[in-house]
Length: 232
Image (cartoon, rainbow, N blue to C red; front, side, top):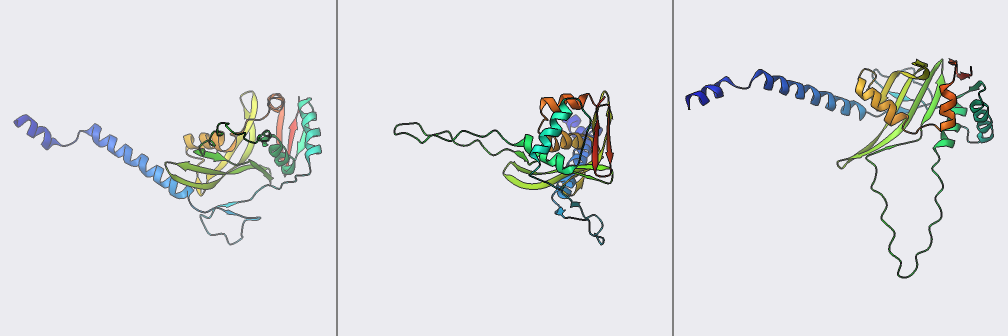
């Protein structure tokens, strides 16, 4: 009995104190990220000159839905091993083209006695919109909208990342300098940064022929508002 009372008087061990402090820090980081991510991001044409400190804006890259023929020709040249140059209209037209879901066959009318069709699949926990590209002043930006529905809590936010394209190993990859999830800057949060880029921005894989041609490039250069893909 005496030994139990002495143990109770000593209080928690250093391990327990450290674990409690670590959990408090993690919870604080999660709540901070959630708060900043929930801040409204304004979609604008240009950044206001009198923008308040801490405000986050999003500028979409231009789109041109009449460029299918141009994109198909540039894609053929690229996959055939030729160097090409593209602007943000070309990139967004290509992204839209490869992101289109396969057309579903028309549903057949139900016959008497047929079983009822299965109910639609549950809503995804995280649903990523169509990627958008913007090329401006030697930087490339990728962004999209993300809708989430987790444990009954739902909402949406804009994800955007700006940077360059640089050599990584034997190939070229997007090298983000700024990453925002809603109003939260995530470029310094390594694990979140990797998740955002791979799961929220580039969740849609590129077609095999384009990926193969990309892996063979000798150089990738952003000049002003143009992306130059140089074949070997």
